[in-house]
Image 1 (cartoon, one colour):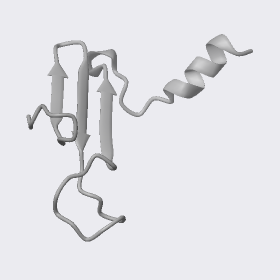
Image 2 (tube, rainbow, N blue to C red):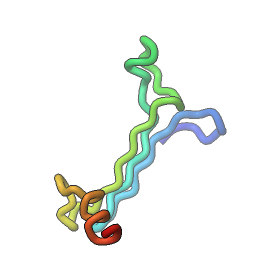
Image 3 (cartoon, rainbow, N blue to C red):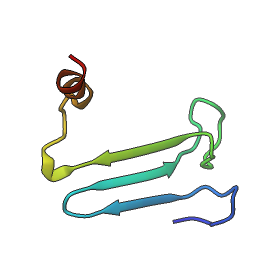
Image 4 (tube, rainbow, N blue to C red):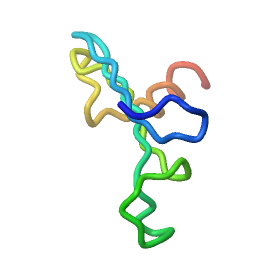
Length: 68
């Protein structure tokens, strides 16, 4: 959702039964008093909802398995 030129703000979401990916330009709440989203404030989400990932320490699991 949004424009396609190189300076535009936009939002996208890719969702399937096994993955959820979101990218969203947000308004700069702490940076300025503006209600307009900017390219300087971005939120992202990558989840595997059916993989029971919510609340897991995925980074800790990675270190435990691969950095002993």
